[in-house]
Length: 154
Image (cartoon, rainbow, N blue to C red):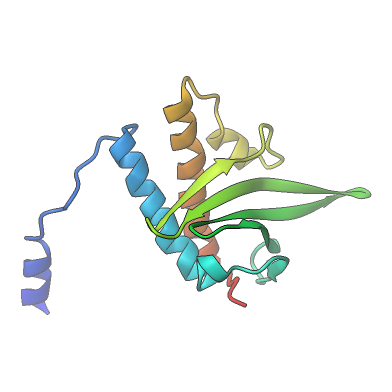
């Protein structure tokens, strides 16, 4: 056991990136892919209208928007009942790039329902900053969804 920990500490990372950089953003996209795959089983075969219910969290909804040869576009969201309507938040649109094994959050709500999401969704100065913010939010949310036990495998 000690020998394994020692050898793991000698591994040199393949990519060193600076937060806010394009290289770092691509690393987040790769991490998003791995986490979404763990949540859905197969990002390419994701079905529409799948709902995950767990005792400690809101229902999680996954909808297929578009399937193309190399990409799939999905909507991942919570539904909050508010009076007679349903508020979808964070309501992220995700693009899965199957050949590159990347997932990018391409769109989300401008104004969030939940106060914690409002804290994460501060205004961005430029396009790279906007992409960093929305994809870091997705990355942290995917961690949370996996931690509480969500499963969108069909």
